[in-house]
Length: 149
Image (tube, rainbow, N blue to C red; front, top):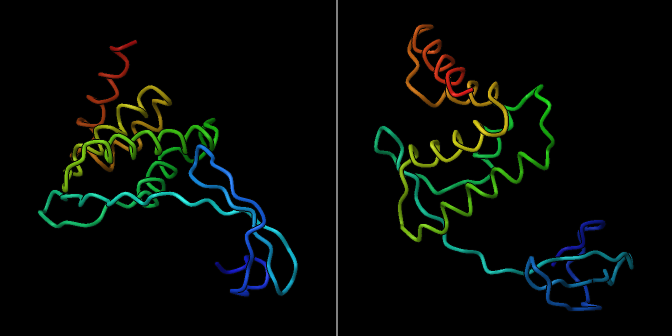
């Protein structure tokens, strides 16, 4: 384990406890003496995401988070809410226990959550994700949202 302060590889474990995030370890660097916390947890195997064009790539939480953040830019949405949304979608994807998941399914999960969270962010995400080829298609989607109210 590298020290986050001086990058030294020699650290010692001072304390170990069970935590909801996994095993929590308090460490001390042997070189600089600073202390830091690490969490140890099982890394589940990630499913492959099947894109529209048939390409496959490993599920990437950071990529999903970046897309949702972009849709939520300049909206009154707390960072914690965006993180929670992405965590919920990620948990649902991993809970499927399948080797592959279509990008369409992930996108639908995100849109379902965004629709509840912020309608403008939903439209922003939908404008990239859905095949909204022209302004009329975009208007129909906005009209559907307005009808829901």
